[in-house]
Amino acid sequence: MSSNETQGGAGAAFQTWMCLICGWVYDEAAGAPDEGIAPGTRWNDVPMNWTCPECGARKDDFEMTVI
Ligand SMILES: [Zn+2]
Image (tube, protein in one colour):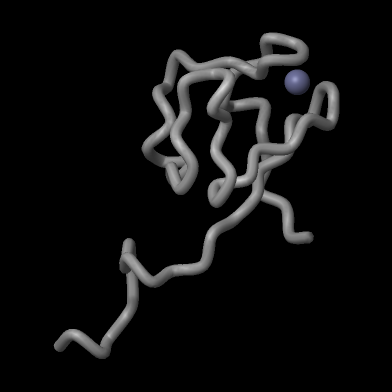
């Protein structure tokens, strides 16, 4: 059971999210310490009221991106 990583597994790879407005990138592995988001914070765990530090866009304006 412990070897089956599916949804929300702790071993899932970190992802990056990019602001569609200004291009600012949120890296789950790095977090956003200056914004109060600890490194390793999943996008799903980022508060809904959090906004882009560059342009103020909401989470809805971010899109998952693969680097
Ligand atoms: Zn932005």
